Length: 435
Image 1 (tube, rainbow, N blue to C red):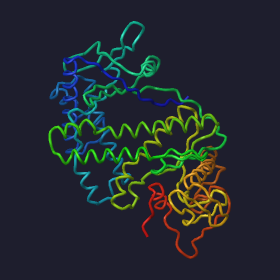
Image 2: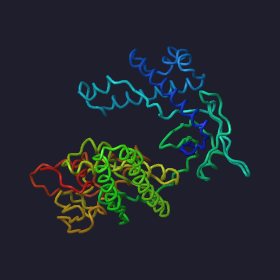
Image 3: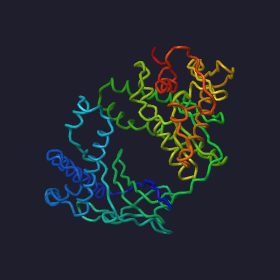
Image 4: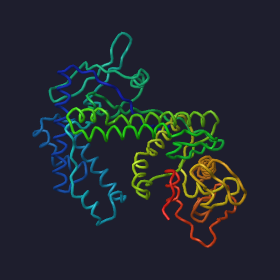
């Protein structure tokens, strides 16, 4: 059986003395991490084993850490550099020799004094709540082992802590609250063979549109974001201490609101797919922020669009429900008629309207795109389950996707076909691509 990971959040309820010890622990661990980062960057040492051999003893002596917390600090820093180097190799900071890449390569990783610190079973032990007894944890601090530290959390989450293997746990201090983020092992639910796919078209005007015709409008979220932007702008203009304090208190409010909306949407989509025995197919919009070209007033709207978060929520909720989940190529989904397969950018008359220039089909543009995505989900699932028998989309369609398997026509005459990916980026933003 495949084991998947699940993160459980628990709140700590420390006394003032306990909170002071926790703050001192985070400060010491992050000072040690920043010092170690400086040594690694100076000597160009990146591997965990080499780092531990060279600086383990000095870390303990210099910062007064115990053995296991020192190991966790080393792992934290080496993991940070491994992530950074992976992004550099992937070209996420620009091509080799670019100014941005050189700037990133020249800077060392620095940790905030209150950055999260990972603990394992040797540094932290759990005593989940029982009948008549509060839940507590025992955690290592620079002031010694702290026992009977009370915890509070969702009863369902606390129940998971009893019967599951608990892995690494992060100690987090955020907005005046102390939290523990525990990683537990959750047995994977076998994925059922889908009887078709529920296509999901992602956008800004409509956050998600399914191939069943259900649309989750983004108007409420967009109004909320515009209001938050006006409030931030007004407070920033005041430049007073009280305004800065209010900005600090509000800084994560919009992100929490957007996350809640995405949770609700993804939960309803997964529930519908599970009820009907279908899988879920979504567009693979990786790199959309880097590819997009928009006018300045529209950039903030696109770059605050949490499509990646919604995709992640759909993915892990589908996995936990045993629902098949695939990502498909988004090329030409907004221009292709799902009835006859005719492709033409003129088919998309405006943000909401689709009218096929060949067969005359008229419908909502996002619904039409979702139907194309659903059909591509079937093809993609065949490639995943039978890679030796199912042709790839690129091979069978000459580099792009035809969701209906029909011969495809394009109403562009002798004009070159515009970049499908760029066009679809403007489709989700509800704008027109530059001429």
